[in-house]
Amino acid sequence: MSVRPMKISEILEHLRCPICMGDLDFVERGSANKSIICTKCGEKYYVYGEIIDLLPKAFMRGSDLRWMKYYDRNAKDYYRLFHRIIPILTLGAEGRIRKRWINRLGLRDGDYALDVATGTGRNIPYLHRRVGSRGLVFGVDISFGMLQYAVRYAKKWENVILVRANASHLPFPDNIFDAVFHVGGINTFEEKELAIREMVRVAKAGAKIIVIDEGLDPKLRRTRRSKKLIASNTLYASMPPIKEFQKYAQNIRVGWHIIFNKLIAIWPYYVLQAEK
Image (cartoon, rainbow, N blue to C red; front, side, top):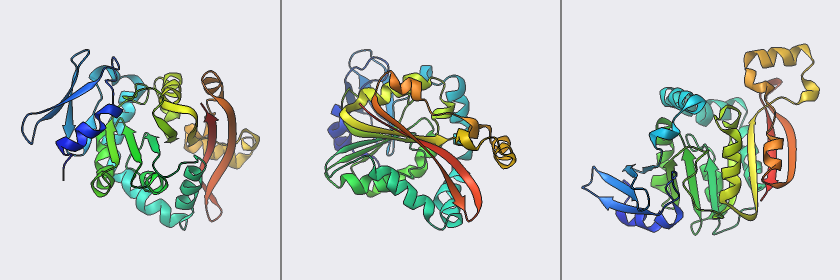
């Protein structure tokens, strides 16, 4: 089942043109050609099945463009890794950890949640469980290839909406989400501070924003083992964007963690939590 015209019209009030923040109007030109028009600047966007594409070419640049192409090419392998291999290697611990992350958002039945860089939708079932059938879960990603694997959740639950967009130019009005969640990606964003400002902008006052990405605790980086770990993936040397968040949010806290496969560290990461 593809996105129905009625469904699109129902969610248009929650979407904006990422270029000018103008209102969007849905236009149907047959089952294979559905488009959305900005009533302010006239930019045209398209709907492909369950995916609403709100990514203008102007917002595909620099590292965002490079990583978009990378994930488009490797979406199938990424899906296998995070939905099949890692859950087995960690004996289910990875899924339980994701559940704990999302529980920290404080979401309730009927809330609106945003998953930034949703990828293949690994977080969507956990978010949907928290907001229930009366809430909304928006999954945003720059990679169309990755979103194609998340489509199964949009088909399963009508209140899961998938949008192709750049995290630094979110296509939503101000103060709409009860929580904003992001796992993986911010270390490589072309406009990291702008993406952070956008996450805060679309969150309601008092809403929690949680950002998680690769990073090894600085206290552990001097050991030979840690140096080898960082050499295997330079993103493990990344630091959480605390200074950027301090400009736009409050009550910022950071924790350092490692997901293990028995005794082998397979993913060191940081958790940054803030409030609008």
